[in-house]
Image (cartoon, rainbow, N blue to C red):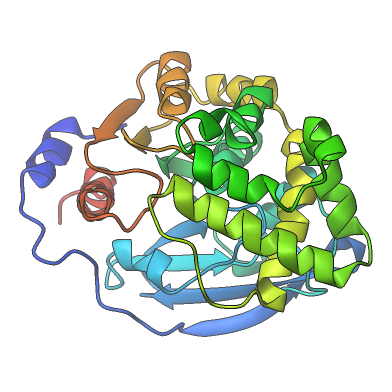
Length: 328
């Protein structure tokens, strides 16, 4: 159970540095999984430390060195992997045999491959979605969750991202729509899927650039001037594949899995100004899961590296470790 007294004492300690120093992976490998995929896996930090699975967002993004800098490398055995078709996993951008159930199978296959009995799981956005679904499915192997900016993956989330948020940022939304034929705008998600499932590479590049800038606008960032690369196209191909199918999960399934986590220590962190995954998502999750902790982060949106969010994640990651480790 959670040692709340030790947790609260740890939470009062000052954070000396925004992020832990960058560390290189201690090991890198590829793990063969089903359907002709192999996933890129790296471990960092103290390989004798407490195991921590860190799930990247997206869908379609990849594991990065920055993501692990919230966690003390002297105390955590940090496990990261690129999800199917993402980052350094192969085949790059592949959609065949790429769905949520396969990703959950991959996580469990990775745990067995590494010989880990129980681990903590952390992730943000789509990574938080995967984390709760994995924990509900493999409860015996998860001892706690630290999650940021939960994405529920249902029609409400997708309707907001692909339209609703445009009422707040009309100029940026119209810039995104410039790449979409007028007759396709009512079925935007289906059209995006067809674009990336097709073979018009020039169109894929244009759509990727517009999509990237719409995401940046929602995070308060200016349009990116750098040209769109193949990694961007692969990212949005996978994202279109997942989002056009409500991530093969849907809101009801995700909330149902959250309800099954009763008794498991869970912390929800959410920026109050998040325009990508709305704060109501974590509010609903908290209301669904009695005993979980909800932490609002003022001055933060969706970006995990906003100063107030960095401080919140770092503080809770440190306290999260102390709360579950018995005194020496």
